Length: 503
Image (tube, rainbow, N blue to C red; front, side, top):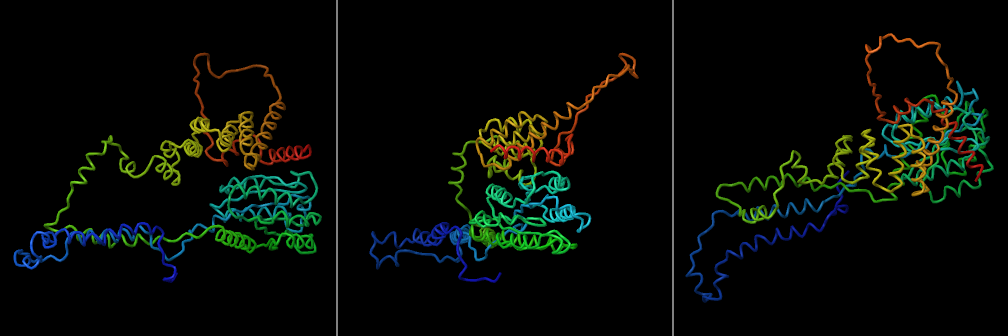
């Protein structure tokens, strides 16, 4: 970006007061050494030049001048001069995407081999692989809309649910786009960021079109529609066009190459950037660090023979400070608090170290949760009476197959924060898993053996405790479940439909 003088400004202008001190310092020093000025009140001014012998100073550059230069340059650097706006390199990967996949029976049509639904799932598999590090949510819908996964940056977990989807998971007929938009708006409110809703369908319910525009009014949600079908005559193209017009959504189609993926990513990134620029002022690049090099040069010039510094103030300050015990991380402790050190470890994925460093109970619990130290996480979250703490407690209980405690924890989270889509989704999941586990236990046949035989004589055998590895990720945890994602999704959607029917 070219330098523009009109864009030049300071991020922290208050530091220029230090530069003012630096400018005045040589003048004050010269005044303090002016004997004529000090003796003018005691000796006649016309006699002073003849009575004083002022040796010439061969050194025009004195330590006070370099100290002045250090103060001025340091003040300018600390003030943060800038003339260029800064957009992080990872901004395009932050665009949240909410995928809504139509599971109506029409999606089983084989005009797109093997079926429309399977072709859409294949496209989504490639899409989430390209969006590594970005947050993506998954919603499915037919006559009702259901949240499958809240926004996650784990592509393996998301793909495991996508591949488990089928048209028999939902029983209500229809295409409830209004329900999808309501779900997406709740997710986006929790994300507190502009995002995109990608509708993948082969048709639309035109009776809902009149209220969709009102649902999207004043919302940072962008809608994209990806039509699934071999040609416009094989699916409800007119209804999709009407849906696109009602939601101001670009209309694309599933392709055999990556054009559809490029189309989705381009619209999602552009919408995120445009909305983000409207919601907040762009950050500016702090160019003050460039002044560190001249600062270093001036500091090196201060190291000259015959020059010295008055260390009295420094020594006095050192004597007043209380002695600290020596520690291995004394340098970090001198500049960073324990929570700041924990944050650094957390951002560099050193979760066990972060859990030990954090003092803040919430972040300590989060770090322990990510480190799979669930005992520490439970003990830490138990100190907090918040929706997030109860939510993570529920997650830990589900991992340990303690579904009653998990259900109670999620219900507590929803009491604190009724509009908590992740807790609502996990509550339904815990209930479904509990029912599935109880059903599997009830259907287990009881077979009594005719005889028991041991291959070891009594007292000769050895016993060994086998410890199972605790799941350290959602994907590994799901693999360890005794049920498939399709089974508990079916139960979850059924329970949600039953609950909606009683409202």
